[in-house]
Image (cartoon, rainbow, N blue to C red; front, side, top):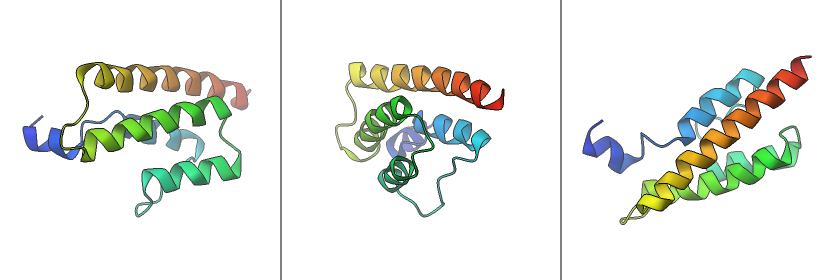
Length: 100
């Protein structure tokens, strides 16, 4: 990945989440900001609250990663990756439960 891609935040884990959530038709509209998407998910109350809580952290870290000139410190970047892994694991469990 190029430095330009990193600078633009294209390598952010938030995109893994967006792709995964499409499995259950939780789709972010093309012109929707991450915060607007998060607010919509909170309003429709279809997404479990623990996933919403993690998404709040992830969106905040993503915006800092993407727009803060200093980016994320190594510990914060690790936190973004860790919270994303945790959310995706719980999401897969939730998805399996609603399919049964």
